[in-house]
Image 1 (cartoon, rainbow, N blue to C red):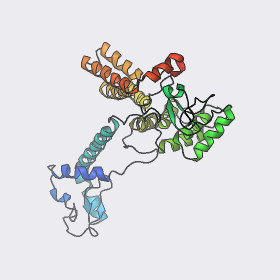
Image 2 (cartoon, rainbow, N blue to C red):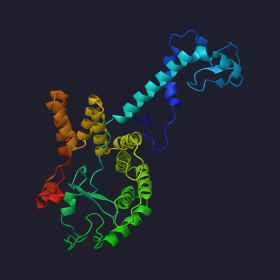
Image 3 (tube, one colour):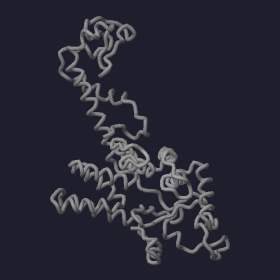
Image 4 (cartoon, rainbow, N blue to C red):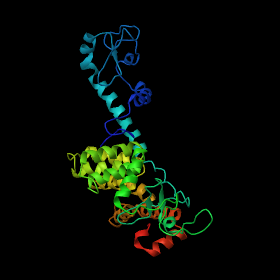
Amino acid sequence: MSTSVGCKDGASKSNDNVVCEVNEKLQNMSTADMSTHDVSVCANCGKEGNSNEISNMCNKCKQVKYCNAACKKQHRHKHKKQCEEYVSLAAQRVAELHDEELFKQPPPAEDCPICFQRLPIVTHLLRGSRYMTCCGKTICSGCMCAPVYDNQGNEVAGKKCPFCRTPAPTTENETIKREKKRVELNDPFAIYNFGVRYFNPQGFAQDYTKALELWHRAGELGYAKAYNNIGCAYEKGEGVKLDKKRAIHHYELAAMGGDAHARYNLGFLEKYEGNVGRALKHFMISTRDGYTDSLEQIKQAYLTGHATKECYTKALQVYQEYLGEIKSIQRDKAAAISEHYRYY
């Protein structure tokens, strides 16, 4: 599993800060040669000097220095065990920091720009909101179905955007043309959607490379779902060579960015590996974000004795909290009109 914290594909944060944090622990370790903690002393011969004179560093742990290559080579056998301890402790701390970031509850999804209520997540075929190619806003189903009025308070006939009052596109070509303008404005959702059009041909010729490039770009601009799509591509080997580690890396980026589906995917993979505790953590976080499949996974874990009653009760509570944040009379009216407007 990847241990880079919140990094884009192909990049990872420097471990310098991690090493600094573990230095204090390392200095308290009982070792045969405590002088190795003094950066101005050669760990082999004990020669003292400034940082320029004693600058030949252990390539692996980067915690001890030598006055020259000969001393470094001579001390290698003696330093081996201590070096492994340094590296192990640093790696452990890196993993701890990674998990701290990974298992944080991400911030909730944005609010509808009209009613200012939290937007529901969209799972399976349910559609609780709609992205508008005219203004780049994502509007909840309740506001989409509400009457639209002009500046004089008269109801506007025909379909218009509830936010910017732009008439809805009448053809697929017009929709693509609007999306292209949004892409040129660095709109992450439009960029993501163009990636989908290339990956599963919708108006464009299939081009996996182009799709992945667009999804990377959308992810870098903050649209976490794009990273989930990249993870799925690597997990299934669609358009790229099958690579589970890369899949998990991108799922983690998406999950930390707030994508509940990616969080569910991580939980399912942990469950498959037998890591029930980690799986339940993922499922609980995505349940709090309204992902019903995760709630079902916790329920099944409880019924099979892999989760406690308290765990399942907590899951039900956090899901109810989510429903309280997204429910509204207006959205319920929209859902009553059509299954297309269901939002939970």
